[in-house]
Length: 258
Figure 1 (cartoon, rainbow, N blue to C red):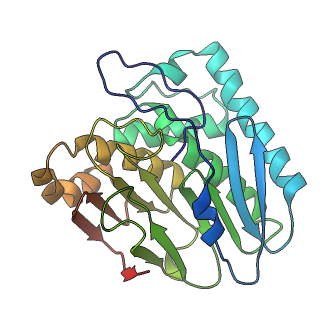
Figure 2: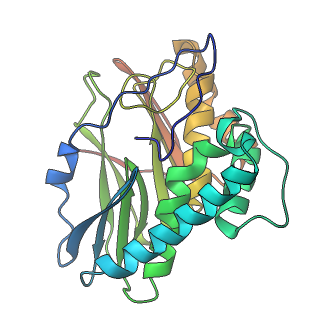
């Protein structure tokens, strides 16, 4: 759940910009029969599993996507700083258009979707050379495999943390599984959740929606409204939210013990 680019200081809004620590959860990443490798380009830190080592191809894709985003930010600084949706731009690069669309649907700033958008862009491109792909970008995942996948849910100090997993069936793939938190990492969240995890066919939308839904959980009573709020965004398969010892889940999901 580490940001791809720095968020602005939102004034009196509480902001968590903790430096990214060693991603120890990757030590448990065990995709049977796939080769795994790490790609780091500036703030972008991806863990990729594919049918072959595709470091060069993945690096080129990341460099191109980052160039598109950074060039757009240079011309449109509000794209980086805004905490609300920005206007559509038919002249924007494709990855920027995806971020604008996802953040508009979720009613958050465009950078709330950047990690998911990059994971999705890399994953979709590499599917052309590998029929199975997993791209993890700071807890935001693009997933396309021949077998069901299990995604462990990390929720900081919550008693549920590391004890639950989402089982993703092949019928839902390719799919995005994205997380946001007010207590872990340096996601920018206005809510109280230890984790807000969202599943969508659109990984950029899953990322933006995780931020949006997490922002709206200000007390435990709000957990009852998550399914309705997700339906208002649209194209959300399901999700799970954890606040300390409390959990809410909705949609077409399967949870299992780890």
